Length: 547
Image (cartoon, rainbow, N blue to C red; front, side, top):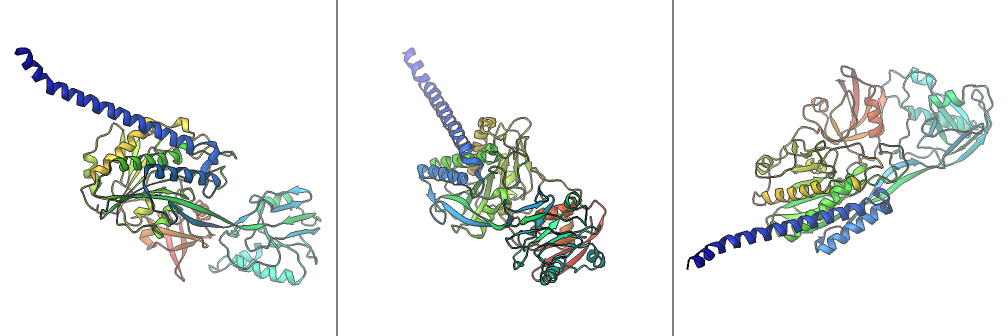
């Protein structure tokens, strides 16, 4: 009888122990599946055959096909404009083609360094034997802008481009076949290649000679030069492809979960931080986030908290300026009430030096409460900012709470060495599980309230000694730099700049795009006073500022 009683008492203990063992085995099996899948996804996306997944390339298309296949296998429905895809055009303006060439006395000049054609030049080949000081019929002519710049240096409305076009009219009437423009003076000329120029083409090529080019190849103004010039300009166009899938729980609100899948290709867009014309596989940036998104989708398909719907978006064109996320927000493929947005960008290099950073902590008062209930062994630090150098910033600017998961920059960032063998897959899996837990924690909270935050401190960005505190619109295709918004408390906000303003000149420096704006910033230091010119609609405004 005693033995029977002991056995009866042991039954619940043994049952509990067996249940615990089964649970542990199930967890170990789930972890093994998660890690195996992450490795498979990253291995494919960061393979050489995808050639770095440059936006609009065949490699990016292969990546898109792979992502679509994963969603089809998971049984998660498509929500693009055509199946899972949302295709959009990217017009990057004019480009100087590789066939553009300037040869002086059998020496080939470097385009961009020694010279560049202006954007209103026609595609033509011109040959001749001119001297700089002579103006002969049926020969190229030269135009030094030094004198007119000195005459107009106190005229804020002087347009050097208009002056050059007027000069072209004059020299054409006298038989010139091309016009070479240079500046032997010290006044800044602001002559640039404006990729967004849409003005009519002139009858003859117009080429700007840099000071370095003039010094190297045109030192003797009286010498007869053997010149061969070919100008070839074209529109740089490509297509981006957002990949979009949807779990419909018939809920009032939708959680948007995203990651960009494009990268740098061979470095054609000149955003790589090394000099190699080689494949940039982008294992961490952002095959890691793409793989994590696919696995989150799988987990949510297997067991989905039911009080939100889930929209999964793999963004194209992030490396070109968050183009895919901006395009989706302007052209949503489904009408939803966004609850919040989660973005994963570079989540593969966690270690003691590269901890997990969670951005957007301040974009909703709910985040602090949610994180109190989350448990993780990952060393986590928080950044309150909702903006930043990745796709969550587009949603934050649309007044949607965000969470940005990021394991930090590293020496392989934007280099050919960002390969799959350097990914910390165990930590990447822990991040996926942490985000799943976060989603579960928010399930019964309803729609999260949105809050504005300060501007970001995360990411690898170019450093300047001064700043206007504005957020560039990288997708703008006009002349100047249009802004998406201003940082609270910074100079731009203090002087009254607004989203949509187009910045066109800072002091003596005019700019035609984001890059030339950044070059203009380099001309100033803290304490400098200057003037800022902008366009707001059709009206031009000028501000006195001090950095």
